[in-house]
Image 1 (cartoon, rainbow, N blue to C red):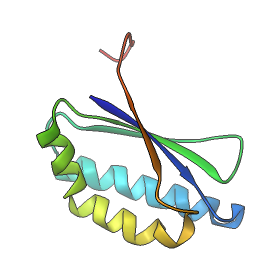
Image 2 (cartoon, one colour; image 1 turned 180 degrees about the vertical axis):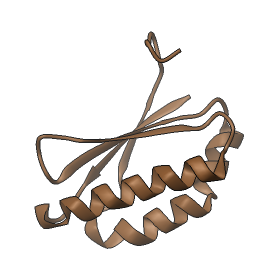
Image 3 (cartoon, rainbow, N blue to C red; image 1 turned 60 degrees about the horizontal axis):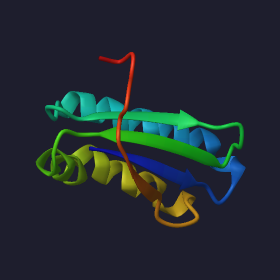
Image 4 (cartoon, one colour; image 1 turned 90 degrees about the horizontal axis):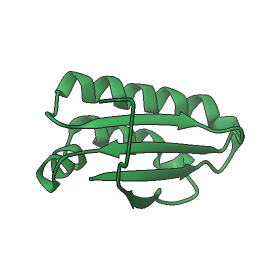
Length: 99
């Protein structure tokens, strides 16, 4: 199971804050060590647009992510920066050099 998460900032002035928040989220998730969870963050050529790819083997791991201290801290850091809640799209891996 995977989700594509699309974030849009209200202002390009917050680009660096969003990057710092995403880096802190990933560092925190690594420290929490939720088994089977992978989260990758990406900036685009538009300074207000970011994407994340959240990968998890089952709903229990997804719920662990949603309930994690790192995700709570991230939400607290960026909610005011975003135009609204991130949009999500379920995606399914077909092929990857990752594994």
